Image (cartoon, rainbow, N blue to C red):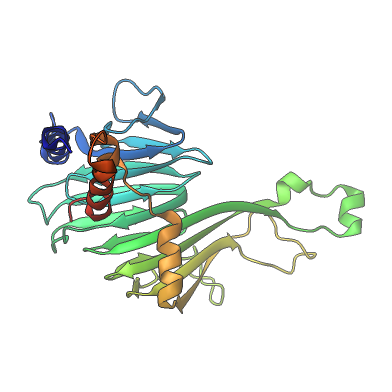
Length: 299
């Protein structure tokens, strides 16, 4: 195998991962692997038009990513955080300020979809790293976790009398529900869920809920839906929203399955390296396979 052919692409790969960005203020990460169709736009910039995300494209503060039903992307942030976005995901980087490194402020939102976040650099006591969905806010210091956020709706049934009188249309009875599932692979995650506007027992303003601390192997599911009432067997559109939570402990096999379901493989190395296979009876192929099996993103 011609070593010169192999060494040059290796240097290019090293530069790709270690070279500083042109503007740290605007560019906070890069798409290292893209599969399928992934739309991107930046809501903080002047040009907010949609475009197709490509490997190597920069991700900045205000960037919105929308993966198709067969699309996915792996993002490497400047703080060494790795984000895997699965299919049918809507994600935004709201704020990203490195400050003094461990005291960085990072805020992201996932409206729906799947994400695996590996926060490899610990966040200091003065810093903040949060990920928000419709029903939960996650605060992390240094961990790996998977989030699934699903949006749906339901139509409350009406009685025959109501249907005949046309007292309420189906559209008026529709109420959105939202569900978030958080699985902690490593470390801990603090999860805050929205408190109801009023205490159902006293009718007074409800107290803020204390954050739920999830440890390694824990899975929390939150579901937000309108509060059920006895009003003619139907839920009025004005019913207050109530969030229910459930925490379970998963087995090692279940944790591995959750992680693999959303983790995106990085094929940047394999795509960048050129191997001369014209001699040594294909020894170059074996060498490439050995390199690619051991290669991973910086941790």
